[in-house]
Length: 305
Ligand code: PAF
Picture (cartoon, rainbow, N blue to C red):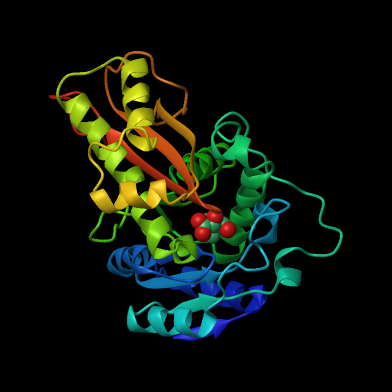
């Protein structure tokens, strides 16, 4: 496996692949790789002749006061994992290589970027779309792999790929969870053991809302209210005793949003008639935790994305 820092070197490599009709899968990451990333890399290795993994902590997608300076940077461990998983190239460019002097172009995906993460983190999706577009142009993959965990990001990237006619398929892979249900995230390492107990409210609330949908509830307001109740400390009926104790001891947990939305447009759903996405963010201490779940009323045919 090779580590490349220069976009021109990656360009030469993928040029050789294209000339020889060798397919290329691409997994864009910000490093600090965990089992969620490993699942994306494994899928790419299965479906393509070669796999490129990028490791780049993208300053453009961090807002003022966010964790850019402290975001975990673990390149040696990331490279070792990529080698173990049979990726072919780790592309780890410098900020200068990704943000050339004089850069003024910004990719804005309007509408689907505006709410939820876009509303909480001004400029976040412009930063994501601008850097992902640049990465796509350097790597020129046949397929690009993203995790469902960042659901809104997958919608933004798909829209950009369709609107700008990038010649590639976007593949969205299922969320990988720890055995206790918490969705894997590079930011989970910020949680203290006590905060982690409180964090479990998030996957449990979404699972509970899915049960409600499967029991026949189709009213968007009722589903929203159910999630909100399960996420707030006042409703601790399904939480273990230890979680109650921790909250009494003053762990600060705040529901930023808990919504049921259309899976393509992200507009709130009033009456559920087909597939929908439960989107929620719980801030525990200083850590924002995202999670989501795709739901549908009983009997809905499978959804081909
Ligand atoms: O999901 C991420 O890790 C980042 O948003 C991405 C897609 C690598 C762009 O910087």
